Image 1 (cartoon, rainbow over the protein chains, first blue to last red):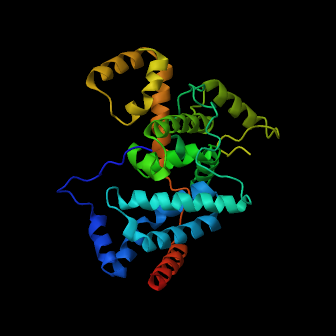
Image 2 (cartoon, each protein chain N blue to C red):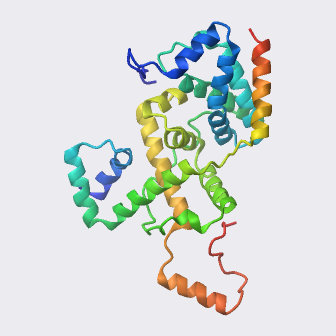
Image 3 (cartoon, rainbow over the protein chains, first blue to last red):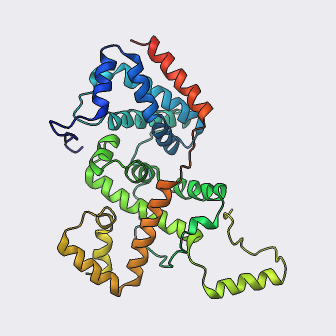
Length: 231
Length: 78
């Protein structure tokens, strides 16, 4: 585990610090503010790990309750959110373990794969390719794409690129080393790119012509959908 | 710079944490290597798409129900 560096300077206090002080002094409304601030992000992380909505809801509740009960243990040398994510990650893994009836579950699962570490698809994408799909089609594509990643890659990508945590904060939240986070992030990014390329790449003139001719000749039954999500 | 060397620092390029002298080397490589240029552009776009589209929405009614449950449990704790 890497050394945890203080995230704020001496003069620069994170706004959460004052709220935590108020909670410690018995002001529950300050905790209410913290819960509102982070509940959506925590739910998202729990959902990415457990891949189950009911579990994610339970994890979110349990994590906030545990954080409240253990607030005295929060040292303040890292961000409150990073500490909270670490609790939520552990709760999520515990929940998965229960579902798999005690089988060991860790953040290291399936990360030995070399799949996608070298780019293979070099086709350029259409400009604003996501606009070729409606909201629900796009959502399905993104879900399917990210769910296909090993769990240990998926969570690193979400914390680092979607949530905007730094590499060091991601390492701390997941109990991983900084080099492990870096290596997983690169592979996650490349694998997602490779998978999205199937949907977003620019259609070549030859492919467009084939599509147009298929339309003219009527449905063939086995033609791929131009904008649909693959089964 | 080779494609393998470019790939090794792709994350730093995406995160814009590259030293000025390496930046010039990268620019030279990208001008002559269309493949690496596509990998950089499309990986950047991949991150942007995931950042801009919430795939696990928490509807307001669910959020309110969970929020109330959390705060009720907290008020009884300690």
